[in-house]
Amino acid sequence: MPKIIDIIGALEEKAPLALQESYDNCGLQTGDPSRECTGVILCVDPTPDVVMEAVQSGCNLVVSHHPLIFRGLKRITGATPVEKAVELSIRHGVAVYSLHTCLDNAPEGVSRRMAAMLGLEEVEALDAESGAGAVGTLSSPMRCEDFLREVKRVFGAPVVRHSAFEGHGIIRRVALCGGAGGSLLPLAVAAHADVMVTADVRYHDFADFGGRILIADIGHFESEHCTTGIFTDIITKKFPNFAVRDSHVESNPVNYM
Image 1 (cartoon, rainbow, N blue to C red):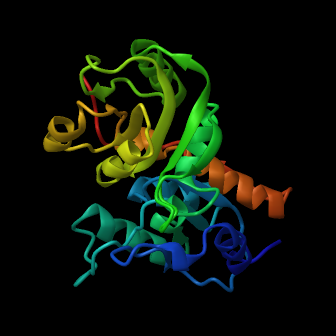
Image 2: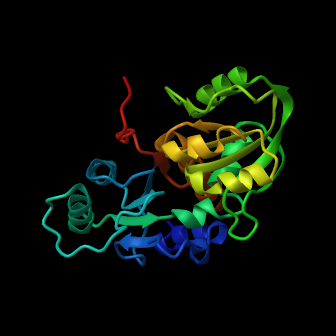
């Protein structure tokens, strides 16, 4: 049975902590890495419910995309979901390990997985300096409406916020960024992308860039839920017979009507 540090080592081979952004807090959040790992629960957000799911499943490691501790904690009283999750993880001996922007910037990270899900070809990093985002070409060009329907299907998005179709013809070249990728819109335009698929796009970004590139906002959770598949691939390749599974209790905190 591998130790928790062995699982961490496999993850960091593909997404080294050196790739994280300066504002981020990737890595081990709680727990003793020297303990034997009894199983892994994978998730986007390490909520109290996910920690308790790990406890009830006999798993002592939660691997998440978003960090459990993103901002400093001055107290741990259980008054907030973050404090509660930290308290439960420590009390029950469940380690929490998070790969956020280092997975975003990794060569086989979030945006590359999104590109693969859409079947893009000739994929490369959108930001060559950091490795963030991706841009590639559809195997067959698509009309704007048809492309957005395919995006909804592939990423399980109930809605897509998008800029106007007017001024945009056939979709061939696609830029992507998991999570909040509005800051990469200038690079997507410079890369001659016909569309940018991302999340958390601001009103003024739609206004400023919507005439130059079709913008498709699929939702933050929807754009990053593929991270659990990346975690699964990394861990099971190194430890083929090890117990790894997605959380069954995790859900998108954003609801739609």
